[in-house]
Length: 168
Image (cartoon, rainbow, N blue to C red; front, side):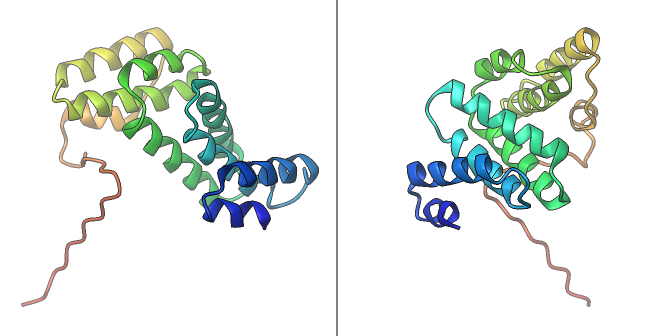
């Protein structure tokens, strides 16, 4: 409770201290995953690459093993948001090598998204082909971009578009 209170007050140091203590002391608690999630999200705001990579690792673990679908989805969206919009291309390429092959797919998708937004369409295909051949990576997300199918929509930051159909 104290960690979450300080999190919402944006008192990051106290929130981190309380979340870390909770995760360490209450290993079997059903709220431990929530504490780890908030630690991961806060760590992405840190200015050091080491902390950011540790935070990604925490969130990746939650994507794979969180006890609830909603927490797995939240962790996935937090990593996607961060990799797609906040990490520069060169860092994505370097950081990718720090993670196992399965996690590298997240970075390949982020790089593809970066290239797509920069209208470097040939780079999307070339980069994806390289990672497919070298590491055996597969991504339906990137496959859709390469085929330029209409289902690929620009993923915008903090954007919600709603269409309303009024019957005649």
